[in-house]
Length: 292
Image 1 (tube, rainbow, N blue to C red):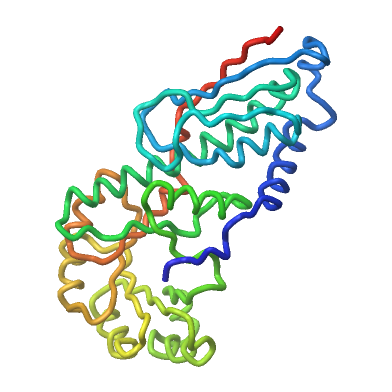
Image 2 (image 1 turned 60 degrees about the horizontal axis):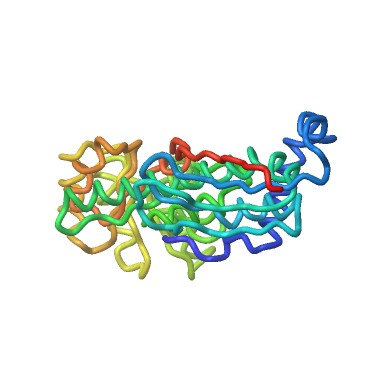
């Protein structure tokens, strides 16, 4: 059920996203900067990490500065995808007006994506501390519209794994699909006929539905049961019921405080929507100094 690289943004995709973000912020022009800073002024800026976490998003931050000053000099001062306590991240040298105008957009991207990577790393760590065989931590489709590819890349940078990229690369039969199809069995049969090469996952809310899903899906090569909104004791019972015949995944609004108990139930995967819909921004700052 993991997503593929088809959701990744290439350089042109990043440039388009940056152009939209700058258009939103700059509009007809940065009136404050244009009024107070000489057109020929140059400056050096340094972005620093002010809190522990994982940096991710330097490509898009650099693209933001480059969009306003193609000749800007960019030097990475710290690694991406590694936990660190803080320190300098990126040095930027170029036209002062461009650096000032790009600052907020670049930081918005970098703080947001680093926040996703950081919460993912914390979640992976919480699961690893709770279980000898910790579950794989997955993201969901609860992403910021337009930023899914970047946010899912940030999840990978934090040590998590991508679930579906979108609605097109795997089958996930949820309770509404099953209800409209006439039941889990019918829904699975239709899914197999429609897309025989895709992985199939079925949401189950109780043990009766787990049994129903096993009856129709145990012989599917890539089949997973999604145990939705089950308490840890019920999750443990469901995992035992499955008995390793297919993969199991738990979902249901898990937080860092509850993740350990869920991880200890023996599920293979835990999907955490909060990785992308509720990750706090990582604290970063940009200090700028004029150049002679």
